[in-house]
Length: 309
Ligand code: GLN
Image (tube, rainbow, N blue to C red):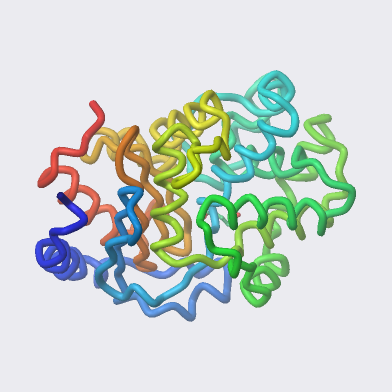
């Protein structure tokens, strides 16, 4: 069993760590520059009492784009598929996650998918709640349930740092508001979105969320559905087609596991009917994915034959 292979996992992590030197920290969100680029951690959860974890397992980090999977789950539960997909598409894009180009060239002007920033902003606007705080509270409660960790909060410093510098996300939002994708107050929406991205987790938390998504959305112990089955399927499908930004195709070939990354260096992976994996390695490659995290997932996939294809 992979979770018992602690020594092998520890040596795989040290091998993958050598790649951290070739990556860069995300610097467009100033607070993310403070991370230690040599950090790498891995957690694997198989639904048991404990979660196997190796490397710098005590490090916490912000979800960033990984939160897009969770806001999508909530918006789909709140509004239903028809409403959500009338405002955001289902197609991958070969463009970077914060690109604006297809918003203008695509007709109608709705974002191509919920895993790019434009799509995620539209999705966040569809989370139900009377106030932005209420919406954020609902997202946090959902994450507490998925992880079994009621301590999870958002990192105020990271949220504030992103909000101050989120001019590209502001532009995407104003463009979408003009084209009727949503009608929210843009500053309120950005405030909520940056707090959502700044939710702080450990790699063990990520592995547990990945596990629930992998296993039909069911609560680990009670087996009660936290996410309806058809929505858990939609999440995994988007993780395969769009989860690693414009490296998703190559990742599907080399690794073959539904996964979602964030610019903080986190990666959450879900092996259908199997393991949940959480990785943290803040040094990123040129597409914004954890450079050592990608290598680690590739070696795990080969060694334990984890590809779903
Ligand atoms: N908060 C980040 C942003 O909107 C998330 C992007 C990412 O992780 N790729 O730019």
